[in-house]
Image 1 (cartoon, rainbow, N blue to C red):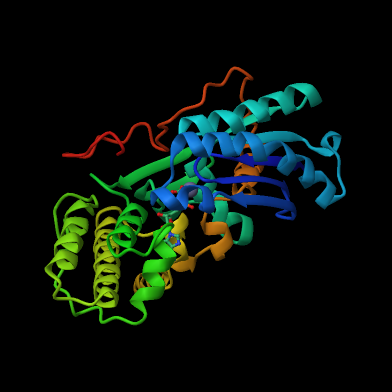
Image 2: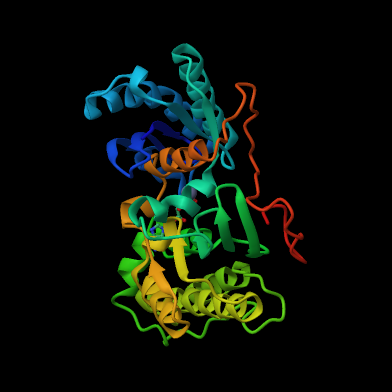
Amino acid sequence: MSLILGIESSCDETAAALVTSDREILAHQLAGQEDEHAPYGGVVPEIAARAHAEILTPLIAAAPDEAGKCLDDVDAVAATAGPGLIGGVMVGLVTGKALAMAADKPLIAVNHLEGHALSPRLVNPDLAFPYLLLLVSGGHCQILRVEGPGQYRRLATTIDDAAGEAFDKTAKILGLGYPGGPKVEAMAQDGDPKAVPLPRPLIRSKEPHFSFAGLKSAVVRAHHSGDHQSADIAASFQQAVVDCLRDRLEKAIRDHGSCASLVVAGGVAANTPIRAMLEQVADAHEMAFTAPPHWLCTDNAAMIAWAGAERFAAGLTDPLDFVARPRWPLDPNAEKARGAGVKA
Ligand code: KG4
Ligand code: ZN
């Protein structure tokens, strides 16, 4: 059994965790920065980096205390090395390197997306490779075939905004504040999902990809028209996202075949109607469905420690001069999506 220290600082959550290769989470320390970013309606990179630098050291120090362990008991230090807001990523990675060097432990530079992608295996020991993954977060919206640590085939990606970004922007337009996803979901409960006619970009398209920019613009127009209640806009928007995700997933399964399991990960996976739709798709294709618990869907360090444990078991460690990466695709061989911006 190995014990991994995980560090996460790629966006607006600072976190440290101690996780064993036996799937035991011995410690999890997490500090959000919502109050610092709320006045700006989104994450301000410079504020995030400074906040990580202030909070990370005491958070890491608290983890071994919580677990009744010391740094010497740790087998490897896993830190998010990208993709993300580069200032924050550097804070976490440099701290991880310093600890690894001081304690003479191996460093594992974790791709944040791999943290999300492997997180369902932390809670579900029966989830075997390969599985079909819908990765939906604030920065990414992808369908991937997960074949093992470091082995991904990207089947679809967004050509513009990510699904979580669309939720956050809709929340901003409706004046719900930040972070938007949970607020839009809560407001949608009081609305009619059929009340506002909104587009479903790229639905039934021959291209496999996602697009949410046009949906966002339609939400702006619906709001400015003054013809609709905010709750109806929220519900109709959420339904449009559900429909787009379902259509693209069905296409991926048609084009590439199914797997034994359908898995969802990333912050948007916390959304209940999206989970319900995914369960239906899995049922229809006789796939098992795995969704991590809500706390494991949004950014955290347990998933980074777990990805570290999986990589460590596969003999994958990294040199101390590993460079932080603002962009870092899980499948470097994936073709660039037609019409896509740099994010894809
Ligand atoms: O994975 P995550 O914590 O950070 C990134 O790596 O992006 O995902 C955050 C995203 C945000 O866009 C947030 O609005 C969205 O996940 N989100 C949700 C919900 N909870 C979080 N979106 C829809 N419904 C939710 N309940
Ligand atoms: Zn994330």
